[in-house]
Image (cartoon, rainbow, N blue to C red; front, side, top):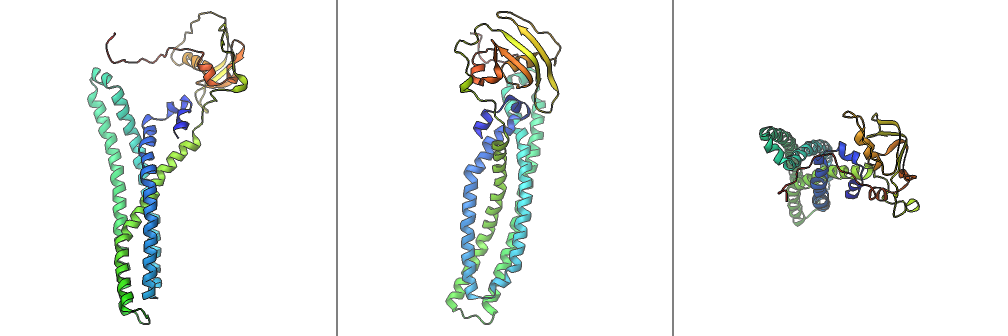
Amino acid sequence: MFLRVLYSPLSFFDVTPSGQILNRFSKDIDEVEACLHYAVDLTCRLSVQILGSVLLISLAAPYFPISILPMIFIFLAIMKFSSYGLQLTKRIENVTKSPLLSHVATSIQGLSTIKAYMTEKAFLDRFNYLQDRNSMALLLTYNSQGWTYVSTEIISVWLFASSFLLLTFAPGHFATSTVVALALTSVITISDILVFTIRNGIESSTKFTSAERIQSYIDNLKAEAPAIVEHHRPEKDWPTWGAIRFINVDVRYREGLPLVLKNISLDIKPQEKIGIVGRTGSGKSSLALSLFRIMELDGGHIYIDDIDISTIGLKDLRSKLSIIPQDPVLFAGTIR
């Protein structure tokens, strides 16, 4: 996932909040690597233990499997309903957490500017609003888990009562008193661990939401063009003259958006200094970004010293060009 994000085009970062990316690399990674495998492993081991206890009780009371059939259907229904509800609440929690992380990150980065314009209250109010949204989603998740635990406790009481009645009053079984006592002990054990097993099973299913979000990045993020194209590498001293030609260039920010540069053709001579004048949004920056292939061409060609820049690798191209960013940057420290 890190490599997918690292090699994504800049258009991805234009439309993706930083908090969403931080959420993928913090909470989602933590749930998958630190929590998911533990929850799945524990659920499997407890399920095997419950199955063994049920077999032992069945030896002492042959009618026991029939008595728990309705309970199994109710158990599966609770698992399905709870898993679906908890996955939805988990998604809401993750969605509301990304704007909160983005706000905290941007506030820390622009702390000096916030203080200079005395807008601390506005940023604090925004933080409280985002925190309340995330807390409500988290509370909804906890309440859903609480409902599941209460339902599981009811199933445990039913299991214990039916087992006790069958082992005590059911006719026709030939188990010894020792086996009956061991079966009753197993019933108590099942009652104790059933809630824990269901809780871990549901938590495992909800943590798969984080795995889905990570997998969506791995599957859906598109990478930039290759850094190096071996069969189309320019000479080491390229560009020699610095002649630039635009031929019928069309550029758009992203697929589906209108063109920001349409049918642009120009010829810049070697060592020639030019100035591009236009109003805001006329495409001045887009013209420079297209030289670095930060925005890939939708049509046309750009040549630098008679080499089509779309045929060479990004590393070979960008290492030969220089640009001064137009975004202002505040540097901490003295002028020295």
